[in-house]
Amino acid sequence: GRKRHILVDTLGMLLKAEVHSAGIQDRDGAALVFDRLVNRFPFIEKICGDGGYQGPTVEEASPRSMEIVKRNQAGFQVLPKRWIVERTLAWLGINRRMAKDFERFSGTSLAFIQTAMIKLMTRRLARYPLS
Figure 1 (cartoon, rainbow, N blue to C red):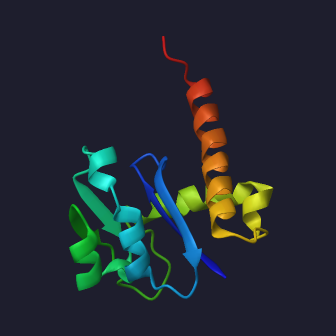
Figure 2: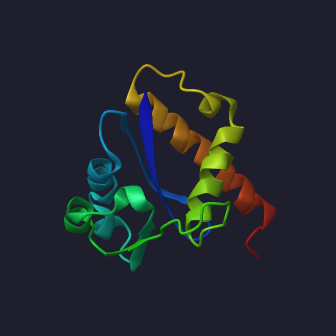
Figure 3: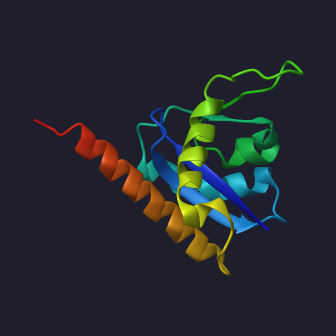
């Protein structure tokens, strides 16, 4: 199996993605996403994540302050900020190639994530042309 870690802006547009084997925990995979983050995106002030990204390992790897969004109730509840990432993952799932893990290598899976987001971003830009 594989795990996908994505870093998105408030609109759900992909900033960085990493794909690795499922044997690596979320806390350890976060360091891969945070690598070179400040150099590429200096405007990021806060990083939000779910409960899997809490702990000293993530805090040390994070170049910015972390806000952990936790579940409080047993029933369904829309969690602030977390739905942005879930929506982006759903957008990726619309692409047939992303619905299942067909790829043999993690790098190929990452390339298809980036290709799917390029398609999505260009369609959104074309919908609202710059004047």
